[in-house]
Length: 197
Ligand SMILES: [Zn+2]
Image (cartoon, rainbow, N blue to C red; front, side, top):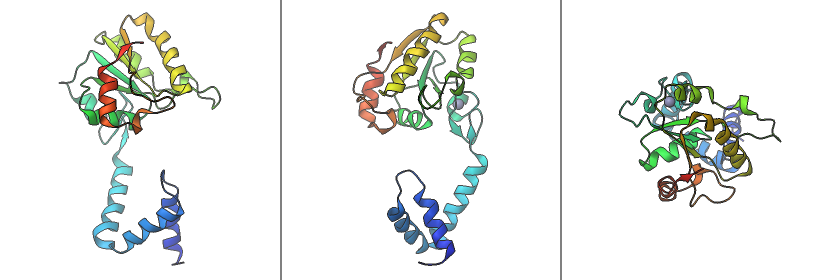
């Protein structure tokens, strides 16, 4: 088509989630029409983010600061931690503005088939927080998938000795669904209507 630079761009975009070759061509064309106002700022933003964004050592969120903005916010409720699978889930819940505690991003779910075991989940910092004895409730906000449910049962057993209230979000999360794809209303309802795990 239009030379190796364009081919490379289309290839890179086509590897992004939600993109295929067709949508990659569309976005590359649209960018090429505005090199100064869109392409260069985008390239700059990508480089900045790649250099500055890191994983929060406290909760597993992505942020340009470690600890992240949420973990550094001392006005949040230290007594509640909401456990989620992915950073996308955290961001989705945060957008509802309902939850004012802290988060723990597992970075996945237990999955015997995919070879994901407890040691692969981001849990060390959760137990460190529990050791500080401030936490009174852990909300398990995991997806309603087979692996999500397996992980929830396993975590429940791990958390029992800590004598904290363990709740789970329920209502409105469709079977097989992850939190990330739900609308804010459904997420708010699921958080508010949490029940003992
Ligand atoms: Zn954090």
